[in-house]
Image (cartoon, rainbow, N blue to C red; front, top):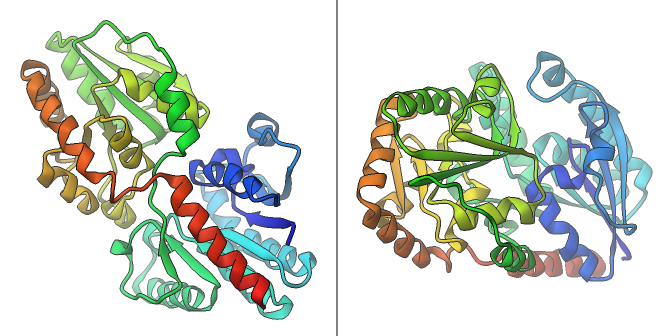
Length: 376
């Protein structure tokens, strides 16, 4: 097997941190990568194309954007395109499929071709959509059907599932060793503020955007000496106010190594998830694994159930999602008692065993599935 296939509802592998971290690991085995994706906005492929001649990235669907009604309506089309894409790939291929919306049609096609599907379930589909009861129950049964029939079902943790089997494998969100080393060796200028906060990834209406704007305005009224660094995709009604705030530096979308480097000058990382969306209460953020390796305490909304072990250990701080005043009060507390941040940094070190470096985790996973495919 000289090639591994990836299929994801994204324009390129670089567009998703989890996928981009898999690229060097696959290439290191001597295998090339063939990627099939969905270009949601014009120009994304060229902007985010993976920089390696051994990675071919092809588009099977275009249009729709990300957070729009049109995008949601296009998911059935995506599933049909995936089904025929897997059929065209022929027999006995190893295919990583990101999300149930990709893995389900891929597995249906693979039943005809003998290919092996790895279901990378980074965001459980039924927990993202708001569906009426019968439709939700049907979708959950289809998720379970897919989970039991694929070669491997990769999950960020078991907290989102009410079933288990021996082909379900946890892949923790943690950094690559090479990215970690380069980020630690990068010298950056820290903003001249008493408290420097970091936000990265996707920041939208349900990822703290409006709350951060409100909290920054309250902090400015009180004259707090703080600064917020933002790296990633910012969208929604609050986006212009957030990225344009005088106490914010906005970098846009950075490479993984560049994004990691900003942890070295930050006092804490902000990770907010609107609890009205079911999957947000079961969040498994890349940022938590990154924070562990950079000794950067976590600030999160208290409704997130999967972060309670960090809070209990004193490695994270939590306030209710919609309480911007409580968030500002926490910022003030951290500024007035810096030793609390020091204690939180120390508390983070105990979690490194629970979040092994990504290289180690994915290498073991890839060896397992390759052996199973080549044995057939």
